[in-house]
Length: 67
Image 1 (cartoon, rainbow, N blue to C red):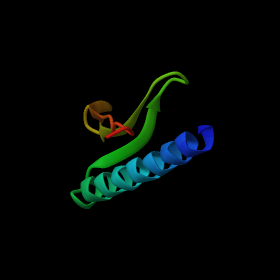
Image 2 (image 1 turned 180 degrees about the vertical axis):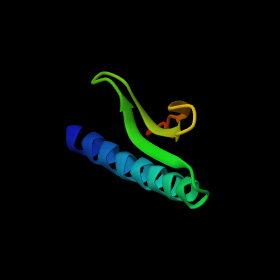
Image 3 (image 1 turned 45 degrees about the horizontal axis):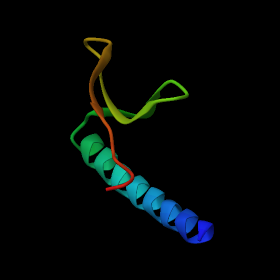
Image 4 (image 1 turned 135 degrees about the horizontal axis):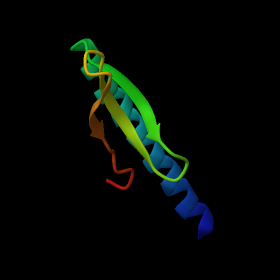
């Protein structure tokens, strides 16, 4: 049973990585600066939009891997 749960988790992670990449690429096409995995070791935001003029992140996007 543990193998099937692990397999399901790996598949879900791959799906969320694919969605994350699609969103990142779409935002970059619109000239946004997009960084990935922003945060500390325990908690990270999947995608973050950086504003050069303000010199800070202005939007964080968290992608639920269980969706």
